[in-house]
Image (cartoon, rainbow, N blue to C red):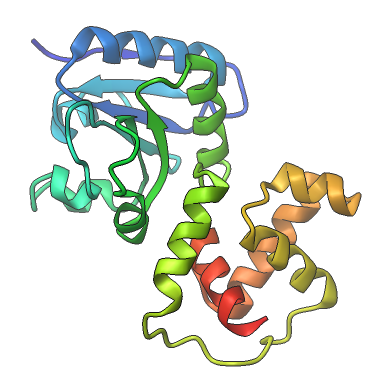
Length: 225
């Protein structure tokens, strides 16, 4: 049976597609409907990447793949899709839902590009908030897991050069907060600046230290600040 999709015309995420991939079609349909209603994003689903992508006319903005990991170890998204589908997923963001806790798979998954984790017991509103955060460029990972990832990576060889790379005092301040897992909203409240200003500083400092995401920025900070 061909998967269907839900659309929502209003909302700040109207141009951002979300694809839900997993074998439980009823649950996926309900989740897609909820996310479409609560975020305004376009949502499609299917039991494979290809079928999810074929579920409707997709907006052109960068999107998010949500992989159902119920009963699976889910080490990385690369392990969950075939070689022919990986190029279809890689331009977009990836998160896992229905993840079992205490598997210890987050560090490897993050290194492969996974941006967030939603656990079996997470409530729908928590998933909605997390999806918004991920599409807004944040990692949806607990501070405990972020700290564990940094500690695991700290002893490994990395090619981060020493120095601050021309970071301003404000950028260093924001990077230090980011490294301990602070969200954009946390940083905004602590420094009394707008969330948009925080985003601009983060964009600039990522460019200066040549990292693609918050985890790599945190690892850079651990070695250079």
